[in-house]
Length: 429
Image (cartoon, rainbow, N blue to C red; front, side, top):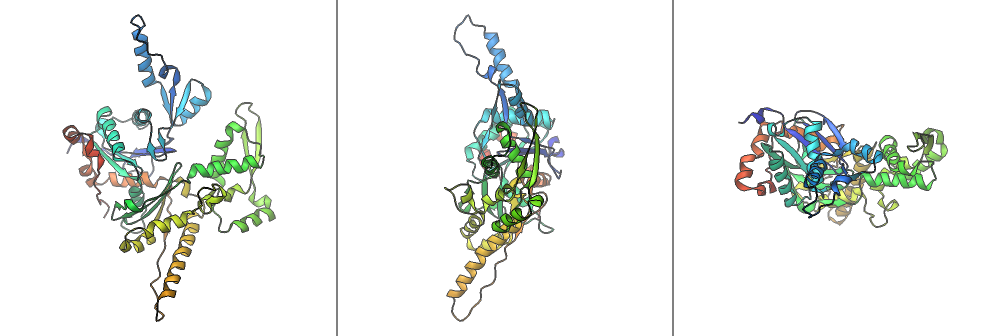
């Protein structure tokens, strides 16, 4: 075994909205930063002339500075606001990497400026969306082995890691449905014995960002006094601090109307341009925001299938011998599942669908036969916001992890195609 096997592995979970990074064996990530890069346009747009009399050294220096002068995360957001020469780039959209240059720069800052480690001394565990094409894994492998010279790399599927994080018993149950609601996408992924059932994956076009946009829209339509340039950020903070899931939308409306002083909250902020203070009310959007998962038609008329129905369809399309186990272990993952009572509402609605199907099937049976009830259980745990990262931390701290990694020697012998597949290993049993 090489020396890197005795050091903790680096675990980086790249999401559409936020990236979580840290070292294996930890309970929480060391850093959580927005997945964004601010690049200096004055260097990037430097004209490339073929004129021999042009100063080639100036052009060379501009290229070097373009590679060095960039910021990521919160620093990138702050820099783009304070300076017009920096433009924001979001390398990941809907769970897929779209800008590999920006992604490489992002990883560079993560490793050297945040984690402050030498990539040659640590094995790496990276995560990917369940619908990622194999070519994307090859690009990731090329960057990691060529640019950062890592000794070992494992690319794990996010739902499998979330399942590994969802401890329900003394051992980790590797069969279940992962409902991953992130900032840029929602995936419902059935996993049997650690293997993703690819044909049954469901993806819906409603995510955490849509909840933020809906809250922003509700506040704008009501004419709240929020500066336009700050409205999205205010809506995001309102969503994270005040939103909750209601059991009955009509009852919630009545509660707010009867006791507004109890349910309507006040938001206070400072206008970024003038520095003047302002305040606004937060009312119905507190429960209407998360409601888009259960009644999507209130936000998007093109998509009307509620999340509980999507989960039920996903399980019904899985092999019949796995369905009971899948209903029994529905694991939540992602920051947008953290709304108060979200798991209770989800469990209640799925149970209604399942019970209705059981009753309908019993009605068709002759001789008064009764079918065995189906247990529906939605697992919620405190770590679910970082479930994917925590699952990666658990996996990467097992001895089997280093044996499952693709090594630098394998990459040099066989090329990037080795990264197309990653073995499933059950280090937690």
